[in-house]
Length: 266
Ligand code: ADP
Image (cartoon, helix red, strand yellow):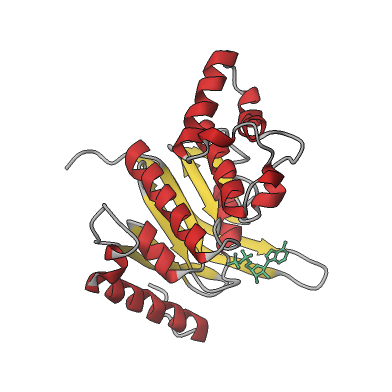
């Protein structure tokens, strides 16, 4: 077996929010490892701590205890090796910049020639199917296209890991299916390492090669599930596979247990 290339290591992560009305223990004790090139989905009941976990992974929030490591080095703040795509694409794009300008903006922090920057932007826009819209402004685009711009911005940045927080929760079902296929395509054709947080069980199984099922808050990893579906996925055939239904039923059952507080810590 080839040596593992461990990308992210999360060890006994705990996060307690302190507030005037009392402490909220959002993450109890979460540990897992992610290899480079994986597409890992994180699913769990609403309010279980998915966003909190993601913010700790991305260095946007300091854990109360425990650690997050990337390639063996502690993550202590936002890292240029990570890009995050949030649900609210509308708020993450600058309306006064063109699509190209939005995708290019974070690259200004990297030491690149303008030709190299232009190439990265053009390549990223092509990858998300928006090569033709480079001169448009975000407000001239549909919600799904705006989210593609946000994804292109992350792709152009060439992060080692792309972290996505319920990125398709605000778009219609057809657009969502197209965007899911875009994420699979980025993963398979570019070998991108992706952490994809969602509350949607079907989405987690359709996209992921591995699904972490989180318990209710204070969170721990209730199950680390391997999705043994063929890597070439498509919306009709994959979702019609008996194995897809089995996996979905299994995760659904786990989440119902989590909600009822019946899950037992390993
Ligand atoms: P999810 O993303 O799974 O819906 P969150 O990570 O947003 O869950 O929240 C987990 C828990 O932490 C919830 O009980 C939520 O109310 C609480 N929480 C989230 N953010 C804060 C905060 N800034 N201050 C206090 N409590 C918070």
